Amino acid sequence: MTTVQTQARTQDQARESSPASILVTGASGTIGSLVVQGLARRGASVKALVRKAGKAQLPAGVAEVVADLSDIPSMRRALSGVRTLFLLNAVTPDEVTQGLQTLSLAREAGIERIVYLSVIHADQFTDVPHFTGKHTVERMIDKLDLPVTVLRPAYFMQNDLQVQSVIESYGVYPMPIGAAGVAMIDTRDLADVAVAELLRRDAAPGPLPREVFDVVGPEALSGVSAAETWSRVLQREIRYGGDDLAAFEAQLAQAMPSWMAYDMRLMMARIQQQGMKPAAGTAQRLETLLGRPLRRYEALVKELVDEAR
Figure: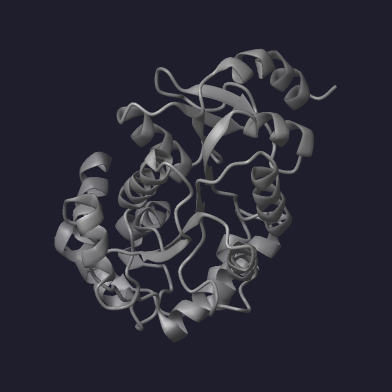
């Protein structure tokens, strides 16, 4: 018997007797953990799905559920007694299978309140594997008219935390995002949007109509303007490193599998060509939903620099 199966069996009785709740997949990751925290702050009954027991630091009152999106029996147990589902699955070789199967299992369990985390331009970046994978899941949602809110976030501002040391040490902003413009989103804003949609669907007396909308920041940044932002905050010149995608892929391949590094290269190629920009009025819609302004890139850069000092 696997660790997942053993841990899941010990939780079966408590899960069956618990009230209907919101299940958050990817609960130990960047977005999932923020969604769990946000729901807990709002007093929701939350179950956090993790692959390994004790992997995530969970807020008080949040139930840990050990399961694997690729393991059908464990997912059937995890979805038992769930009213609302937040579906986030990571970039993996079997991402499409995980997404489609989880939605099918949710239907089997009678779950009619779902928020799915996709990606902006999933239907346009057709040569980028993880974009097309998410669009395939969206097609299932569309064709079966599932009661889902599809969130399509742009590039995460917090991705740049990974290159902060390069920026400060070498005076170069190295992310090859080009000049077309990227409406970067702060991950905290994305999580807050997800929480708002989960609670809206969870509180509804029945399934709500399917919705799809982009989740973006309030400004479109280029490689040059991102570098200028770092220059202002650090009070010294930071230059844009340019659009060299081969070098970008080679650098990533030192820290991740080659298939993923190539996937990221293809994504950056599309970003350079098309950017990541939503329809007019999208940011205003999000600010209305949140009841506050969206966070700006410069504010995050100031946070990152202050925390490093």
